[in-house]
Image (tube, rainbow, N blue to C red; front, top):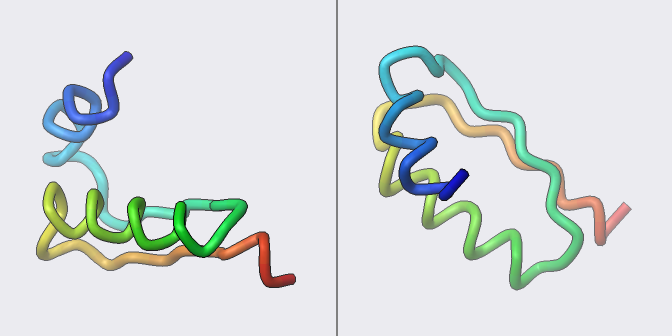
Length: 51
């Protein structure tokens, strides 16, 4: 499923997001995408590439 479609469909249900990314570039892209779709939601991102 397209991530943007999923984000729109889920926006009413999601209270927080837990995202694991593998590189700093992915971290930036995922952060911007989630902030766009969930501007008032709590955001938690684990950058697996730096652990």
